[in-house]
Amino acid sequence: MKQFLAVVAVVLAAPSFAQTPPIQPKTPDVQIPGKLNFPSPAELAAGKQPLTADEAVAIALKNQPAVGIASGNLQSAKGRTQQAHSEELPALSGNGSYSQTSLFKGASGSNQTGGLYSSSISLDQLLFDFGRTRDSVREAEASEHAFDYILSRTQQTVASNVRQAFYNLTQAIADEANSEANVANRQRQLDEAQARLNSGLGAPGDLVSAKASLASAAISLSTAREVTITSRVLLAQLLGIDPRTPITPAASAETKLDTESDLQRLVEAAMNNRPDIKAAEADVSSAKYGVSFAQKGNLPKISASAGAGARGQTDPLQTEDGTFSINVTWTFADSGFTAGAVKAAKGAEDVARQSLIQVTQQAVADVGQAYLDVQSALQRGDLANVEVANAVEFVRISEGRYTGGIGLFSDVTTAQAGLVGAQHDQTQAQADVQRARARLRTAIGQF
Image 1 (tube, rainbow, N blue to C red):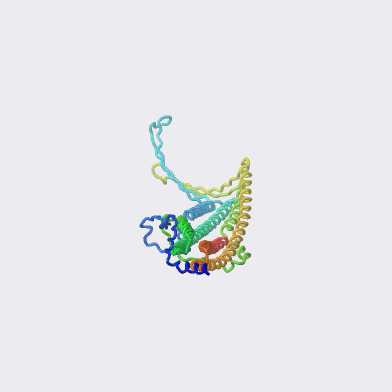
Image 2 (image 1 turned 90 degrees about the vertical axis):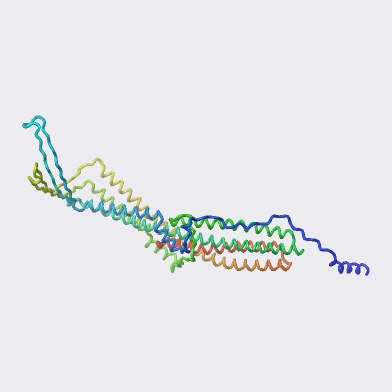
């Protein structure tokens, strides 16, 4: 009985004792870094409006050097077609001259001089060459069509690359925002750990853990800011503008294709629409005409010529004449030149046919991969939304348990880390859907 009364007396007297001050851990405070400085010239930063994905594509198609190169190649092909076609049309030429002759020896009237005016005009027309010139024209026309399709495919590729970079930037910006929210949450959790330690209810280790988590979040934020700037620079390069331009992406989304869940229809669309397939088909056609052209190298060529001329010593029109002729040119033997040309042309035709097969197979592979990417990204998007909702709730529960004194601080840090990972999965999946749909459009030959 006396022992029980002594214990009660100690308990009742306990509040009168001075409370032991909490032990503050000797760790440095975390300094949150400011935004990275990436200065842009004033003329680039002024008046910039948010840019949609379609607007970015339009800028790139205007400025991207790859498009300019493809356009220049098409222009050259058009010139070669015009040159080939000119062989079928009349050729008109003229000539005029004046010559002065001095006689010094061997003729009467030494040192006599004389002048002679002469002029002529001629018209030449190919009449028949067994279709060799026609084959040359058709070969050039088919090649021109191929370069036209190559230009279209280049434009599609540039557009696809721009869209990929655009959604990379939007994802980077979203990840940066999530990192900023993570830092804010880690700071709030640090404040809670400090308050509990000051009240004597928390452990020093919780405060140290909170500071370490905040430092890690700050590092992630710095990295996210760098990724955003790098993504912005890469997009500007693809647009063909100054990489320092401060691009701000506007809310954008790729249009959902009605056939994006029907692989067979997607493949059929690619076969009908892809410019690289049409370019390969045009190359085959051009190569066939090239073989025909080479095979006719030793056949006769018939042409007609007509001309008129005049000459005179003092009067340029003192004498006048006219001519008309039918010309036949036939090379009977050329020491194997034509045979070699035929071999080379047939080899080029074989290459063109195999290239068509290769391009077709690649198109099917592109469509199949893009189809899978879209379906997978949509699935991940739904799952990521669920993941984020659960992670947010887990953070709320963990923080509540810790504040109420029935949970561990490690539960809070674990829950917060889970939330950061879930948010990254969500932004990744959302951007993946847009990137996959952009690739799918390109795979079937659309902008």
